[in-house]
Length: 428
Image (cartoon, rainbow, N blue to C red):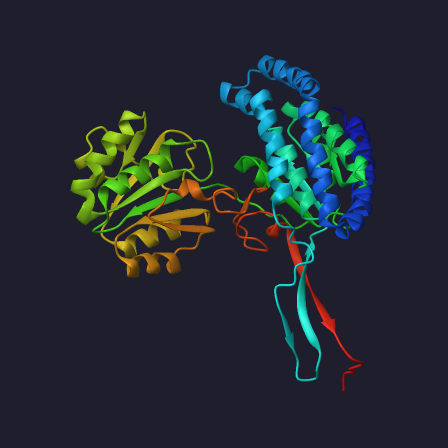
């Protein structure tokens, strides 16, 4: 592309995204004062429309799938991209589940009386306009739309190029449902272009967009964080550890480790490194290795691990901070909890960490010492998920701490403002 053409593309994208974000800002004002009944009605209408228009959705998705196959996308990527009857029914059910969740907007967690008689409290309010940038899974479009609507936020969605036709079809359904419920269609918008200039334009709309949430691979998230003028809620990767403590229930530990590594190895809350107390290594490692190897896991171990597991290959320094996202596991034998905590501090990603132990005091020490969005005791890392933790749903997982840490459900898509009730008080 020539420099003149590139400038023209940037100019068109800037104008398009500016108009969309301005419309979203107006829609956000209306959503902020919309009652729960109205929002739940819109969600219910969306769910029904998704089912009613399933043939049109699948037709749009077929165009994306054909292009993806021609581009040589992997079978795993094609699976994520596909909208079949089961996926569509799940999407509709997800919207109904969000409708059934409590509405956080307007909640006042507590109030207190000041010595001067002022009654002070905090009220939960929407964030405003959310820019959501994500990769190829079109079902995420409805997840984000439902959660943002219920929490009173407008959202501008920038999906991956692989799912453009599917996402635009979903946006049409959502817009119709919003209009039918008496809410502005601009509350949920899909950017109708795959140009990177459009993404850059969105990331520069700091006067109209309140927060950016990226969801996808590390490369996408780092690009967003590096180019955004807007606060970004993100996690780069999930380097998740399980530490098997001295005296742990080893049968339980085997089950937890197999689940954490093998149930869905390509997700951010899968275990990537196993740490084992040296006092349990001889009894535990052969057992867990047998179970993992039977499921096709490649074990990359430290020298002490390889002495107990002959099938293990040597671990390199690059393996300890790695997010494999496949059936590969780094394993290290450590002298004790101090060394396990040091390893996690050095190589962890603030995402998910777990300990298997019988000792409550040691469990609490692990919980207090580990810096991660979710810390588990005697449970699989795979439970770091909004639905599994009782949030109902999530728009993503944040490891950035400001303003959310961990799975982001409805509450995490809001903030609070102070409200003050007086009886004529003036400051002296």
